[in-house]
Length: 132
Image (cartoon, rainbow, N blue to C red):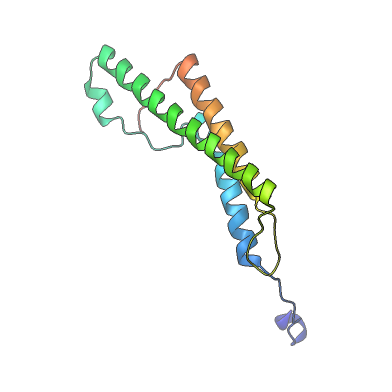
């Protein structure tokens, strides 16, 4: 507006940095399952390429089991924190009090989607693509 009229509008957006941080966290968590299924997460295949097929399968299954356990715990704990924020009516500490359960529920949903993607990939087969 300063370039068009020579005067600033004088508009202040309260809690814009807090809102953008909450949206960033929500967007990041909601994209985890999709990026995993597309093979966009970093995979260390240098060691796996050197193993024979039996050890490669065991390594892949064990890494999936560990990942599923960790993401299941994350999903459970995020759900618990979201429920607590709902019960205690927690809000952000910025100028605009945003209920914390709103961004936390999208983070819980995103981790649940990642858990479903991990379980689906573990049981339908996992083909590791060679790096280009």
